[in-house]
Image (cartoon, rainbow, N blue to C red; front, side):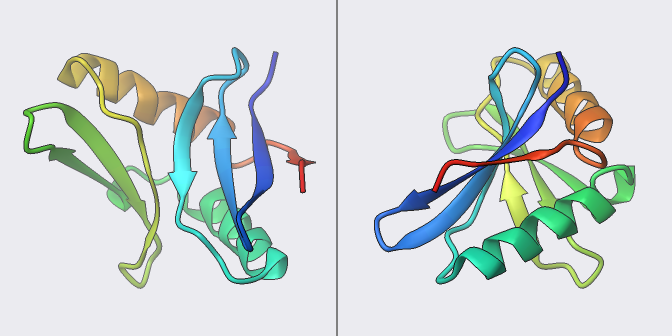
Length: 109
């Protein structure tokens, strides 16, 4: 099963998750004031997720690896969950690269 973007409300705002075929979240967006802005965020993930240069690998204060996807202007588009190992994080990046460019959007608003 292919991945997809789940577009949803968060209170009065909008956000999305890029989900893998197994429905696990790969990437979580920031919150947007409008649905249209969230859809623009999805378009940005689609255009940037295939490029390894757009991923910043980080470590949380609790020493868990995670990644951030940025646009060409350096603005953060979304962040991953915390992973148990660097190898698991790399698997998440590979999944984001594989699913991000072509995943359809499921409008759950």
